[in-house]
Image 1 (cartoon, rainbow, N blue to C red):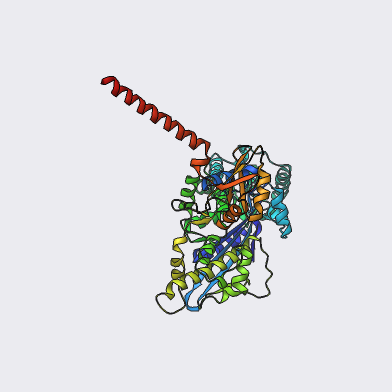
Image 2: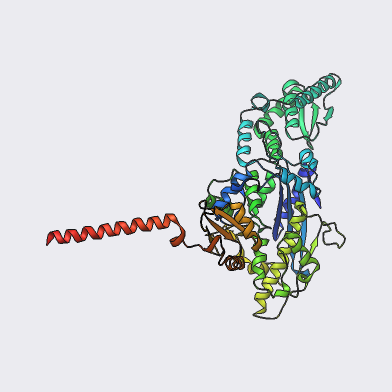
Length: 543
């Protein structure tokens, strides 16, 4: 695993950039400080949710939560060897204060507990996390830089630590310059806390001491004794090129540069259960999420026009496989194990080898699920295997089995592009590139109490949970709707409650069960009768 933190980010970035540029596709995964909450009923995912309703729920849930670890694995196809080479980067990310940019975020206890159970080290992002800026934040910072030195106009006051550091190094330079001669150098190790402190030192030292000039030096500050003429030349060059401000802004962008690179390259982006990852990435590294669901689909597909969700792909592939070739669960860990160690290795011939530059292909590698880098690798690994199976099924109808190219792999799953899995909703997935599919869920069940009985949602949920995944929505104290996950659950429930002494359970019909629809029909009927009566009376009066 190539671990990327603040201290090695700038050094690693050229390598990361080149690796992403050469990739056939890029797999992503993220770990969050918070997410979906089951504590509040109105925020829980429900089988009643339409795609737009689910988006609105997520929008409320994710407010203030952030990505704290981001995994990227670039998969590059080598045709001659029939293999994909995978290079994985595991980024720790954390919001850093830059000038007036000082972000607040939320830590959700259930998310923290979950990550702790899987060995997540929270010290890493907080102490060593790579900073980032959204587009509005970067524009604000750029505007502040345009108004002159940040020390003159920033809204954020210096912390006590920053003030002490600035005063310490100014005192050091004051003592040094008295004995220094032209060309002498003093290296100030300002530390790697963030890009702001070195920037402050540059500005402060240049303003206080006319006989010196400062130069960036691998994140530190190099002070050089200069003549007056050299000082004037360097000042003019800085005014013309604005080097210090530009370097500071680039450093402040941090992981946002990687996000921008992903958006610019437009490489196929692959994730497992990808909707949350896309929403977090968009809001954190790009701009605030749109309030409207359709606008989000338009915006995210403009950034990433080729998106694949391995959970959706897995559901589609299983429709084409024999029972003995299917895997039990679409959980990433179980899918990876199936394709790596079980039946999935031999469903079709000529499956490409996946070779990891990080050593993940080794049999003794320590599997660490829910670490973003490892999960991104596993996601891409499963995608390779499923692409080849789907492509082989298609090509076997027209010829003999053979090794396939990456273009043939991607072409075979092109119909699944932009389809992102939806957990526990009225639709199975959303389509980022067009209209969402109609619901294929079973019809709702209508539950009515017999006699004077009163029903509650908790009671009904407990009764129907015996059949499988269900959600309950009360219409009144005596009526409710039940959404079920599968047609089998609907059949079992209808059969079990047939002739029930206290509850009447039937398939929901708007005409029979909706008070609103029935009311509108009665209004329409009365209006029609009144209209007919008026016409009859008018005709009689004329005669």
